[in-house]
Length: 376
Image (cartoon, rainbow, N blue to C red; front, side, top):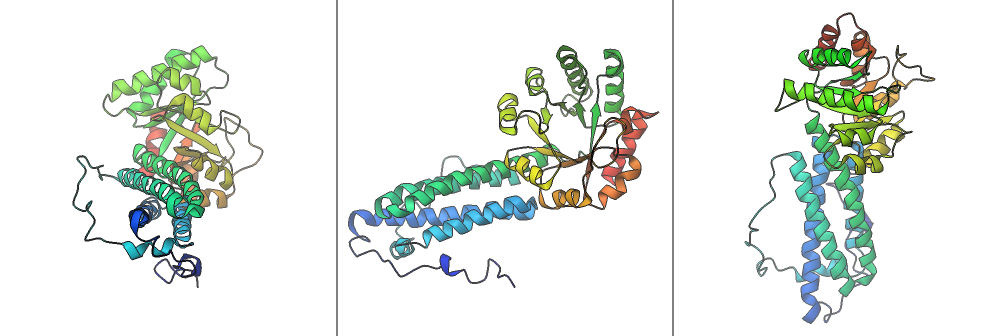
């Protein structure tokens, strides 16, 4: 049986007596440096443990948990090398003049995102101090700390994206994909009808519509949702076109493998906008999460009336993404009310639909039924 974190650490993480600093190394000019290393080591380890607990127990994100655990163990391994384990010899809690000195302003702790932000900042600062101080008394370890610091940034981005998206899309189980319709008036009527029916997220998608006309559709969609609920409007994202999303101040963009890479799309839409990403495999879903996506479109799940597919997402893929990745994931492709129970059995709690609503005899009633499923 694999030992838990609370059990005995591996030999690589246990303090080693093979290399001990001399008396002069632990005294005089470098004594304070060793104390700084000890304090920074403690701060970094504590902060990483908090982040690991958030991504593990709050987000239930297997990928981020594995990354956080790996970084924490890497830190422990670095601190067990050479003379570094002997830093505790100079630990002097009673004589620490920094104890009791409170910062004028403390980072708030009102949400999981706040916990991640505060503790990632603490970890990065502590590892930076380890890098600088190790250069003085244990230069062979400095490069390892520096590499660890850059890996921390990847964990920070992924964890903050997951917590932010979790809050932003809370309670949203349905995204309606809306084309440009026959004309602008028809588009506006349908959009207003669906907003009144309670739809809280839209993706404006029309491959055949020219850019000027598509931009106008998105602008009108934004005006409708903001007029209906000025303080908490429904989300409007644009399919493919990050440039249009940025130009009209939409809530985000949804991209696929043939569109701008996630990092470049983020540069266009900015840090606050939502970035959705289509994933057809677990590897693509994990890559999208690592690249800073805020939510996923996973599929295609079933034959669709609006798009033909060469193959469909296997149930194992949908189940793995739902279980291991905390980003909100919308099942897409031929989703209908009759197929929702099969998706729910795989852990899917969100769906993105087009024809099931837009081609329905009563679009408002169709949308309301899908929303009710999400609430139930």
